[in-house]
Length: 254
Image 1 (cartoon, helix red, strand yellow):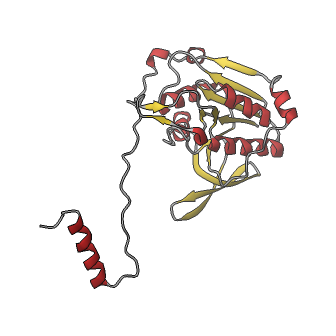
Image 2 (spheres, helix red, strand yellow):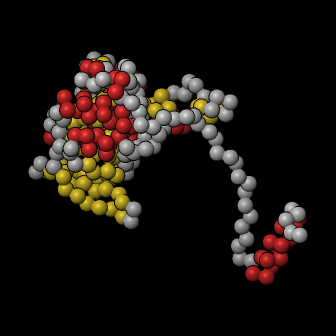
Image 3 (cartoon, one colour):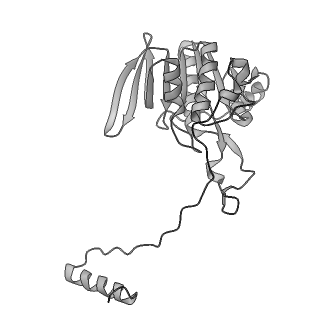
């Protein structure tokens, strides 16, 4: 079985700092693999351990650290799609990944439910639509038997159970088993594993046609709000008196 895992490299969420003068994040934040994508990779590795085959990690845009982490965890090879036209928005990312996945003819595609930087949750569903394969989102449990996935997914009012056959796109949440830590041997082995560099043109795509549908105009910091006052276990008459005194002290009563 050929299993693809879509990984994005993001700024470390634990080290984010915002510069209001630049209207952007402070430069130099350590890049890391998106957390949900690591849960997806762990699921892919467990599937390979069960049925055999190959796990390929792929990313669009700069992702050296994230792909190396994937190889050190146990993926067989890595593919980085870089160059003119990428990275773009989630539509461009999904279009490029779908072109690569068609060429690879994978059986199962794992990805994170969303990313910690943009949080759109669009890439997995868009890839599934472009490939015309089933999608199961919010995956929190799975088993594979007799050629079928038995999927447990989280929904607004509980959990839902589904059966689906490959090919399929599965979007992972963090309720899945914890991603394994790379071992020293895994880190050493990662240096010898195949790593392929591709451009959109290599996949038959015209970089000039990869026009983002969404463009970021910049970041801003939410305006701080004053803390409110909450009255608890106060009789209604006394609460009214306190409210009137509060408003009068600030010149809000005439």
